Amino acid sequence: MQTCPACGGPLIDWRSVPSSEPALGARRFELRRCLSCGSAITLGDPLPESHDTGAYRAGQPRLYRIARPVLGAFDRHRLRLVSELAAPRARLLDAGAGRGRFVVSARAAGYDAFGIEPSSRGVEAAAAIGAPVQRASFQTAEIAERSVDVATVWHVLEHLDDPGAAVARLHAWVRPDGGLLVGVPNLASLQARLGGERWYHLDVPRHRVHFTPAGIHALLRGHGFEVVRTDHLLVEHNPFGMWQSLVNRLTTNPSYLYNLLKRNAPMRSRDLAITGVAVALAPVAAALELAAALAGRGGTIAVLSRRTT
Image (tube, rainbow, N blue to C red):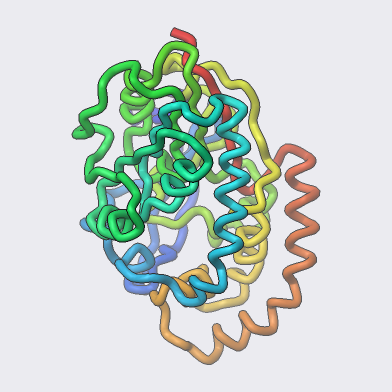
């Protein structure tokens, strides 16, 4: 019998949701939900090379140069969270480092930072900006036990069928009393409820596990980490996630603007026109997300924890 990868609870059939990948057309995926913690899983096998194609293909997104100052501000906020767990000069591992941007930012802030990343496009892009990122997965990375002061796993665990195995590896690498910062979408959020089957952060089939705060807390506690605090007020993903989730109810293609920026969607006139008009919803979405965060129902969460065993 299949059990919840977050807390081990029983799973029940829940809902069918559309793929956010335009190349898959009208294909839908089944989700099952945990009766204990409320987390969910995506059924079926992940698509081969799904993290090197589509929205994850090599190359810079549209408007990347304009967005760079904003991305830098996002990195600085994440570094403030990291600083609650370890001061600069600490050895920092960014697991699932993508293109290496955060590794570069952490090194500039004084951390002895390095990363691991399983995708070729990510490692190549990281090398181009001088980020020390090795191509490796949680299973293949060669990192000495208890050699890391703080690890960051930013929007990575939801991509894994077995996030517990990844957290177990992190537990081995992080020193006793070392820190772990995890970022994941929040299935118990207001935007998840408003977005329904078209919630922006479902991102099936890439996202394999859809965590609630109770689920991610159970996962961390079950692998030797004590939760320090959970932050719901995150500018990096949450206001856009709320806006895109609301607009997804109007467009033919889920997450149209996101895919357009990622050069993964054509300039369809109807969806482009709807998206342009819907820009006016941005202040409403930001206000809704702020209220949700203050109520402990932010669209994504950052969980700060420490190794206890």
